[in-house]
Image 1 (cartoon, rainbow, N blue to C red):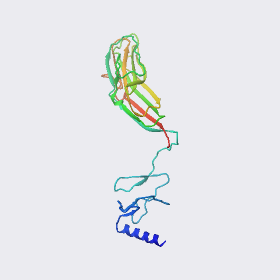
Image 2: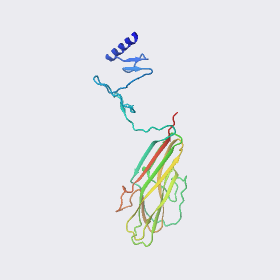
Image 3: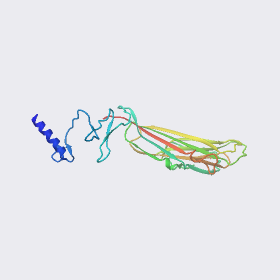
Image 4: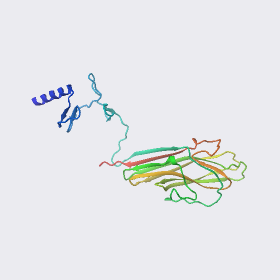
Length: 269
């Protein structure tokens, strides 16, 4: 008991004289350098002064560093707790684009049906794919048993330039999602130019894709579209933007958006 009292007095004197004290080390690097376990039975307070006690925090808070020479502080983090085997969202990415693709005028009236197949290259032709560069994203997968979800949505616009047509005409197109430059999801659609309609034609296109258990590593995702066919006449057509000199829409109204989410299982070792 006597030795403990003497040590405590010595420790207090050291602090008062600004000396560095080492416990378990003969070469302390800070005012108090402990080389070993620290057992704290009550509060751990921070930002105290000579006249006021420090803040012990509240239940559920975590200690966050404020950088060198700044006192740490208690903060409440709104992070949901996941038990072993549950899934948690580890990354999410939302991308926007207002430049889109302007296909211009087209007189492709060939009725040939163009076939797209999973695994096709983004560089394949007949007709060629046109990428929307701003929607490209890399996803890093670090845990097996993952799930990835991707949603692409955009606006489209066309105009045949003929106010006096006597039949209904169609412009057909397709958009696809490419993983590491290979097609993994696609959907075709069309815009109908209705008989005697004098205005432009607009529409909304949506493509969803999900995949389980991506291999570990970095995966690149791209979005590209192709104009397939017009049934008659000369059509202006654009994806993710308005056609030239449009008086009923603009690039903001028809902009593209991609949302990519990666979920991985929680595994406690």
